Length: 71
Ligand code: SF4
Ligand code: SF4
Image (tube, rainbow, N blue to C red; front, top):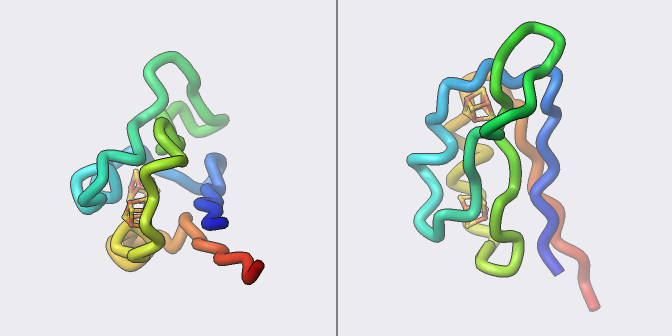
């Protein structure tokens, strides 16, 4: 089980992670704003995540963390 954990309050809505994801897992929240007035990144399709960490590596503000649970 792979979990994509996004600190929405720290996100500046730049969209780099959305473009970096090869599986279209992420999107910028269409209606939600964080307290700084940005549309934060959110998980739109958790099932498709392959845990490649491309999003986490790309984020300039280290907003995304990937957790892989061993079963
Ligand atoms: S870990 Fe990879 S597949 Fe999963 S959301 Fe990030 S970039 Fe996309
Ligand atoms: S790259 Fe980081 S700051 Fe930019 S939208 Fe994604 S999570 Fe937010």
